[in-house]
Length: 458
Image 1 (tube, rainbow, N blue to C red):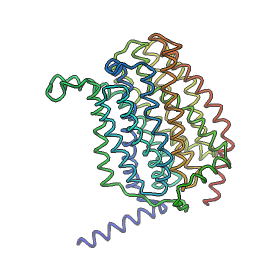
Image 2 (spheres, rainbow, N blue to C red):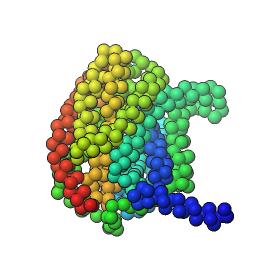
Image 3 (cartoon, helix red, strand yellow):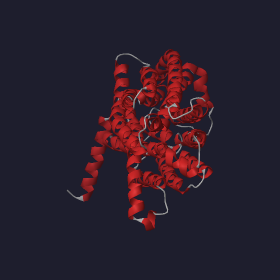
Image 4 (spheres, rainbow, N blue to C red):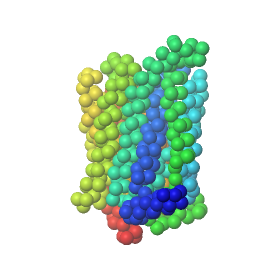
């Protein structure tokens, strides 16, 4: 077979694969892109939350209190992450998404490395802002790409796999954070000329940010833009009018579903930001051991939860539940009220770890529900924008409050080492219960919106 025949045969095979997938992109390449997107999500979470395990060395080095640390985890990141979400969502619905993704990935990785250069609270605050600028591109772009790579029948499963990136990143932030702290001590002692002037927490930031630069290069070389599916060509103007019209027409489907999922995320970000401190302060564990244990327990459980969330949504849908994503988000809220609160108030570190593991079985249900749910009720031309708006709400409300409220309650109301347990418990119980009620109110409107869009695209 000569070169031209080989090229022709390859083209024929790709065309056949596309036809077999019902006119959608080659399924093998779609899974490959999904793997890279999932890895990017994992690195984003790693770079975002690795700071949680560094609470003690950062407070000692930069002389910051719990409230300031909560602002570093929340407001510093969420302020720009949220404000840039909608503009980037608008661009994602109109421009080449792979280019936006690569630029964002490179920026947040460099900014994470830049955190190691901070010598004051304000410098670290600025570096965290730059991390938020880069990461603002990821979720709107990735959710839009997945919707165009995978047909509706398997899309929830694809989103479930994508959400495993959150679990991988969170577990990596805990496990690798503890491992990197050990490596940092070894590098400082073994290579004093290179690292002798650095503190361990600075080396941890460098080790966390470096892999993202490699992935950005890989995506730049191998990432291809898919054809937009659904028959809704994007408009060229940067108007948010069509997006706002969705909320006016279906306030329960879009407004209540978004609000309920954001209240769930308040609890999720409280877990990410403050659970290491719970074990360190209330149960006397050291930072390295805490990171390793939370990573070893959280990683397999959270990955299982993220994977089965997509299958659960698909299973509920096959059984006639058009509001399957809402039901999954309600399952997450109920878990926060029960398992989350119990984990915080457990009498020992072992029982707190059991509660943490049980809650982890349902934490990622909320994220899969958001991506699958909005893809189910939103026209193609607005999908990146609706996820961007979700990102804004998640950042301004969930990420900020989830970190700030716990730190504020710990500084002002529940003082002392064990106060962190009561601060976390209050946030879990109140926000989880509120999310459960709000999501219950969204079910009817969500079902109507799903029927409406299905009829239009039929």
